[in-house]
Image (cartoon, rainbow, N blue to C red; front, side, top):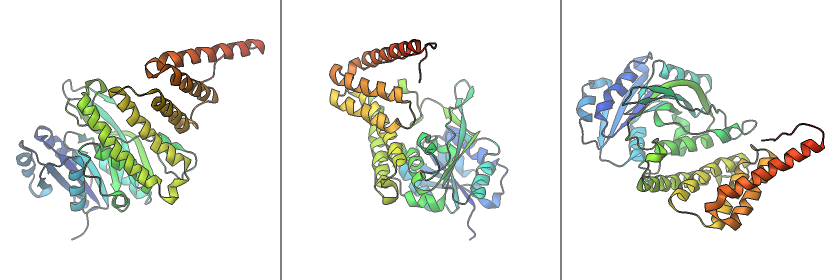
Length: 348
């Protein structure tokens, strides 16, 4: 049997009310049907997902498996997919017209690409209002000139597509990732191959109050936050295993890339439990080390001074300590400007 060029993998769990719109958005793509296969992996749904998907007959391959979480659904689907390009779609999202052709076109222009990702619309399911998401347009690899890849941030599942040959280098996704499996893949793939961003919105990401990860911060319960921290730790361990490889162990950019995720996990932990002075001091030092190429010398000096001040004053007084050093820096800057005969100014 001839391999499909593109495998569209839809992961589903109790999203029967959304699944048809997801499937229809793929079928509506202006893309040769003979070059595409659609797979729905149902991760143990107890609603009418199966009934809604099976009505598409041979146009959609439906697979049911016991519930195991997002990683297990992805691993199952990757094993079934036959395409050289695998495009992901969550069952509660849908693609916008032209998405597939635009993404495949980027892969065809550059055979070395491991991932193509793009911007998206955030659609409020209650009000039907939509807005363009904040998007970091970052392309390249750890070996590209400069260190642009440092600012790369993973997008939701439905905004990503991968070239199989590079995806297989990072698989399988750890089964312990019931959520964050898409983030794990997105953060690992730059170690395997270059990535390419598309700034246009090509997917609608639906906000409905039960999103597994991209939920509003203030709505997170302590239990949900603990789960995110535990999942983030699995992601970090995977990234650190790649960082230990000879081709990355000497890369300052790769170390900073991993450190950004470490900083995120620690900030989440601090929201649950107040850190001791030494622990928070180390956190601030890691921040400076991680961002040193991207901030001014003045800001680095303030950060180091604030770190030392917080070591004395403690975590709960961190904002007062930082504010004091920032005001001192502004006074020094103004006095120097006046002494030099120029107008007062502050640098960022």
